[in-house]
Image (cartoon, rainbow, N blue to C red):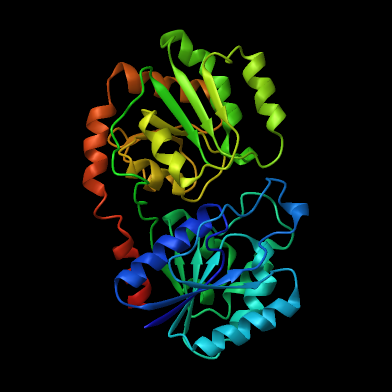
Length: 362
């Protein structure tokens, strides 16, 4: 089968490109022909203040850098290339209404192959004007929609027409492969990890406010913050100083490359996701790949990926005391080893092979 993947792929950084790369690897392993129809540029600098958008690395499949989603002449170039490839299946990575004009236009002009939307979320984390209308414009020409959480499925049924909702299929976020085989822990002190691009909705401020409460019970606790900051890095640096956390917090305010990921998770006992809104999270998938439990806010679809008390804990959102208590319970009740065993058991079910087969069966 010839499979076209439309959307970001390496060398673009971020979870959407990483997801597409892993999915492509699985299709290739199954013997299919895969082609990336990649972005030439992903965002204009005005709406992406998070620094460099590319971090090197090559995709596993052939990749054509064609689409600049705000330049209409690149739409035609992308359409011609996809039609020349003559795909049996076209998979489009969706996560922001910003891409709707490009995607909707291109999908209406693809001549061959079944067209599927891979929806990482339905409701964007930040407010977008006309987001529902843009979503419908992009989704209407698709033959099917694959969502990665039950929460996304509910959002889809709520914001689109009944006809569009009938196209939806339930998928899931598979677990990533580890970046290095050794996943044993190396930390000396109890250590928390906040991992991934830092945006306001991800609740780093809540975690920082929880740290003084945690330190009252676990004085030698440490926190590693690893990820590039989308906007105001100084805000978090000031909070760390004002809360007296300088000796307990290690900051790595930069994009985390693959070779650094293994070190971070080996140094950490548990990954913290104090999100204010969410659909699903690639951070959970990465964390589980290192047999690392997760403590997260009970929002969106996060609860679908965390088995309460077995692979992590869910806490009340926007509550530093609730988050602090979950961390304290995690250490006082010595949950790490048991949760690691439980995480190991679910890896087979949440495989890339199982997700790839959902697309192929559609």
